[in-house]
Figure 1 (spheres, helix red, strand yellow):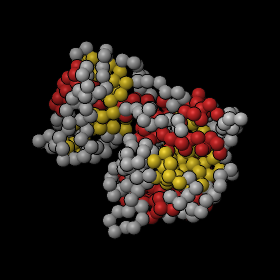
Figure 2 (tube, one colour; figure 1 turned 30 degrees about the vertical axis):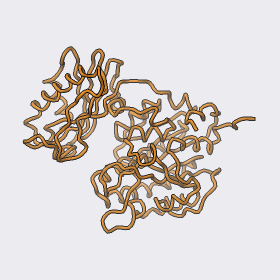
Figure 3 (cartoon, helix red, strand yellow; figure 1 turned 90 degrees about the vertical axis):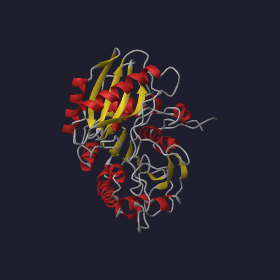
Figure 4 (tube, one colour; figure 1 turned 120 degrees about the vertical axis):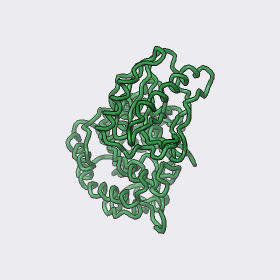
Length: 402
C-alpha cells in the first residue's frame, strides 16, 4: 500500500500521540553474551508496558538494507524513505537552522584524523568538543571563502560534525562521498558520478586540497570527510498530511533538522534524557504529536560499548512512568534502526516496537526485546506503516469505502 494513501483518510481529533525513539535501539549478542543490549537491560517498566501493548519488529527500509538516519526517520513519520530519500547535508543544515537557498549544495562534514600517509585512523577525530569544532570551522572559513565564483561556507554542528555549503550556479550533488566509512583507508576523491557534475567535482577537489593544508597543524581534526550531498527541496508538512500539531524534542541538530523539514515545532534543546521527558511534560498541553529522540543508545552502539548502551536503555526505562502519567492516547516506543555494539555501526537488522493504546489488542509479549517482539501481534512490517497504525489507534482515520 502506498504510504500516502492514509492522507485521504485523516480526520480531526484531539487525541495525543507520543513517539519515543531510542536511536539505534536494535542490537546483537556480543562476545560470549547471549542477549542483545535491549534484552540484557533491566527494563521492568518497558516490560510492563509491552504486556499492555501490541508489539512487533520494524524494517526501516527493506530486508537486508542498512538505513541511514535520514531515511529511517522519514519512514517513522510515514514518509516513503525511498521516494523521499534525503542527503545528510540538508538535514545538518536544517538542524542548525541554516538559511538554505535553491543555489546551495549542502554537505555533511566529519572532521577526522589521518596519519602522515593520508590514511584515516579516526573518522570522528576523537569526538572533538563543540568549542574545538567551532574554532576549526572558523579557521577554514578564514582561509577558504570562494572557489571559482562559488561561495564556501563552513558552519559547526556538534562534536566532530559540521556543515559545508557551496553557494553558486549549476551545482550538482551526484558526487562520490569522500568518507570511506571505516579506518585504514584513504579518503575517496570527490569524483563526478554522472556527466554534468564534473565542474562541481573539480571545485570540491580543490576545496579538499586547500582544507587539508589549513588543517595540517591540527593534532586530531586534520582532515575533513564529506558525505550526504544534497540540494534543498520542500517536503509536505506533517500538519498538512496528518493534521497533527507536532513538537520535536531532540538534543542533536540533525534530528531537529528532520523535524523542521517536516514542519514540526522545534522544542528546547535538552542536555539529558530526563530533561527531554521534562520538556515533554511541560509542553504536553500545547501539542498533539510528540517526537522525543534519545541519541545516546546509537552513540554507545557506534562506540562498540555494549554495557554503556545497556545503561542508556535502563535510564530510559526508569523514565517511562513519567510518560505514562500523561495518559497518552497512543504511545509508541521503538528506534529508527539497529546499531549493534557488536558491529559498532548501523545494521540491517529489524528493531523492536511497541504500540500502547486503549484500542490495541495486547498480544502475548511479556518482555520488550527483539526475540520476544517477533512473536507480537504486529509481526514484522515496514516502518513506513507505523504512522498509519498510530493514527488509527488515535481515532484519526476514517473508514475507507462504503
